[in-house]
Length: 65
Image 1 (cartoon, rainbow, N blue to C red):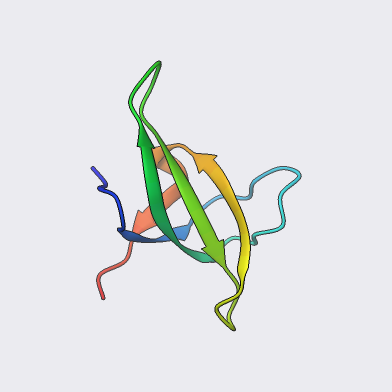
Image 2: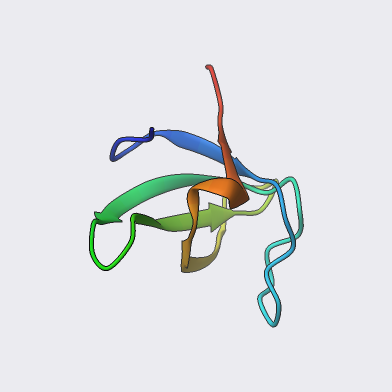
């Protein structure tokens, strides 16, 4: 289970999106219906925003900072 503002890492490629597997991001919103999904803002290594995209719980991993 994730909560807003959790730091996460992308585990699976997102078709047609610019964030590579391993990109770090922050959960900015949680959608509960029709299924649980997470709006995540992903960043590059310099801290620049790459994109904000909705992902499923199997596509991200929580980072322990």
